[in-house]
Image 1 (tube, one colour):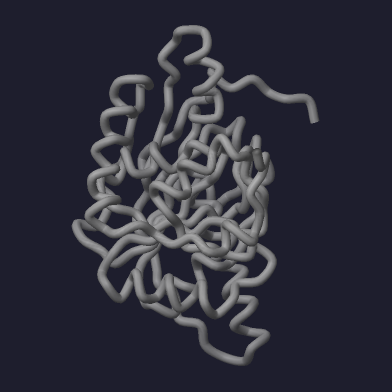
Image 2 (cartoon, one colour; image 1 turned 45 degrees about the horizontal axis):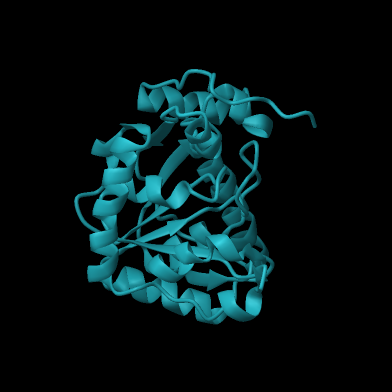
Length: 253
């Protein structure tokens, strides 16, 4: 039996039909309200209809079900094809599907597929800090901002935490607590000037986006964004400061 699936398989994946993803939303809603205690804050910040991009941190491989639980609409996820996925977890990408992306280079085919999603007034889900199973919020990859700018659609910042300890809790017979916090939409921004100026603006907006996500996370999960003025600014704008994640066990670095 093949133990892992790599880019050869993952790069061929695509989102399943919208009607199928719509049905799976109800599965996520059932799981999020039965096997876990899922708390969603800020759902009123979601635009009534697409198109828009949702940018979220990625602490766990099972973040997507809680993502769809919170939004309650079909999501077109962009996910890494330059990785290896264990055979026992491949059911998830096959059932729901995704738009594959090489994290080192945003290729034209990924951009084309993402823009098609937004042209169809659907929702694009991106994890801008890269791979799953991070302990803290990471640095941004600028794909979310770049696609938002090309499609001229807003970005909604979102944070999920608690899913990373779900298996441990369930194995002990406990319903894990998962938190999903949603911030106010922002953008799109105009990228004008020389190539160098556009790249600088892209990085600035990318950092701004990550600060908006950090503002929705407990301070003990923010890492490099802890104490930044922009994070405090957006917490004041949201009128919301998440409490420390007491269900998270700090790993030794």
